[in-house]
Length: 464
Figure 1 (cartoon, rainbow, N blue to C red):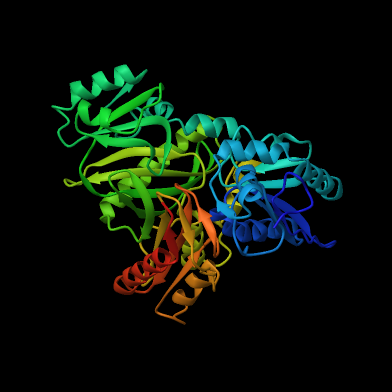
Figure 2: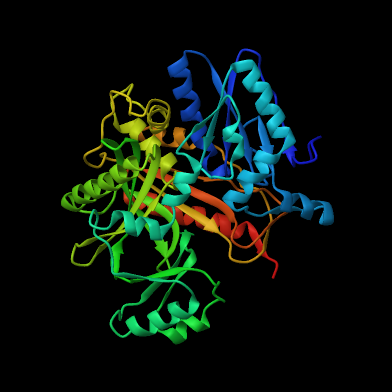
């Protein structure tokens, strides 16, 4: 399991002389996007590109060669117990560990000396990724410090006020102010109070309460700034993916509906959106306004934007994700199967945005749903420690899944991706796997998602 490098948990490098390489740095969940990046760089430079993935994920089997795994906690647990532990790392911590890794820096220096430059593809740009500052390194994504600023929800609310429809909110400088504010607004905000720290994602660092007493009964709160907003009952949580070329050039890919559990926990997405044509048009323009605001600040690259639509059809902005998000791979596959051949992919657009400060020609936006193409995802995250009983291998590439349904080779199909393998301890808050289903009808799609969830549940034993 261990490589020969002290800081690397696993390595299987096998580099070719006639191939140029780029780094991918991030979780395995976005590794699938690298095939689009490789094709885009090959198209632009007229030579073959492959990728080296530097990830924190502990798995029995990886989807390709040229993997470097860096995860100090998992490595320490393995040394103590001789057992594989799947445990997530904070994005900033991982970026710092990668940047400080002698093995990674040595490999980067070798590739820069050989190629002249080294492109670095990331899921999320982080200021801690010092590796991107090496001479000859080029980050394929927004600048890390700027992305971090935009991922602060308080900054978003201040910068987007007057541009998009915001929900009533208040800023609380500490837990005392938070408690007082919740007590004050709870009688008026009878549907609930959404409480969040400035940085939160997929339900982490946020909760919904209906009184000050309920707030006190929740998990211990940090001495930190919070904001509260009125919880708005709604049926749909649309999410939009886009690319910022500059302040005047924003591409909107498509709209999907998020699957949210317990009011604030993201678990997956579905396409096409159930929104009306009018609602989709309005949301696209709100997302474009957000993209232009990002562009004015110097942001270049992919972003996500989340909204809610209440029971009366009113649309409210929720948040910006100044990074790629959970629907990025599915959006890439959707565009590939919907747009004219030769249209630039999202990854090619991001390259041009970052390197040339503009989007490439030939791009086409989807104005309406694609006939007979449905997809849905489900992220299976464990809330307690479990152990896997067996391995659920990925038997097909997700991109091929879309092609088969689009070309009518099959009516529907489901795959499970990123399962860690058998006899692996999965720590709380970590993904057990992700279900991806594609179909030409909704009934088969939903049955396939249910089957995938059942298979993942059956693959584990609870240890607590």
